[in-house]
Length: 330
Ligand code: 9MR
Image (cartoon, rainbow, N blue to C red; front, side, top):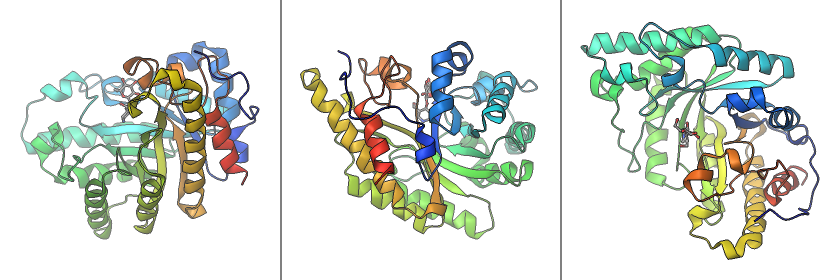
């Protein structure tokens, strides 16, 4: 079913109305080939995250080989159109190149791999990538450290090291820790804040926290979202809603209720964006939508044509877009 013919607003340059950067995760191939996709991004957003192009499996496919082709074109695109480029992601338990997962060596050898990986990528992008998700999803739901090749082979110092290596390679870049469910799992948020707070107290540069915000129309409660963001801010971190979407399907919904749900998604969007605006202006690193149209979303195929974003598959605005916009003008 299509979205409603007439949501309550028209398309305007969203980022120009906002008092914080408004970002989108981009699919590189579409950005190059699809003019409508590209133009909509240029007109609506002023911050760009690559959905795939800067992940380790793509950018560092062999120990001594890096593939900066897409990154370099994204840098050019951002320069040309005056957009901020946010790097995603240097270290993650997923998305490693095969060689990395298979690498054999002692702790020093693994440390060397980590250092070269970060120094080379951040060094290459120095001055052109404003900020990095240095470390992604390193904690479990209960607040313990998530298993990954780095933890296994280097030990938990890998966390401190990856931030130190990133700061060495580009001292001016803003460095983020990025994770999901921080707004809905207090034990996880608490563990992350305590851990990163200890590192900061030791002089490790960590500027912000990416709260991914993969939410749905019913969950989490708005008060939980706002309180989590305020807590991140109170600990002295920039707050990035870094992979924002509002799923319809994950809420266990019925397609019969389609129109109603899209409206509900619009009011959720408004509440969440309005809550974000209550943070101090210096703490607001921005809100990044995790994809442009519903059909571009990682949830579209996974969740039976879920529709979690601001634009429908024909790039028409949805009530979610209007909700975002309304929150900016109040
Ligand atoms: O949206 C991304 C999807 O297209 C990729 O297949 C997947 C694996 O690289 O990553 C998805 O994005 C994830 C992001 O990088 C980290 N947080 C969770 C996101 C959704 O899975």
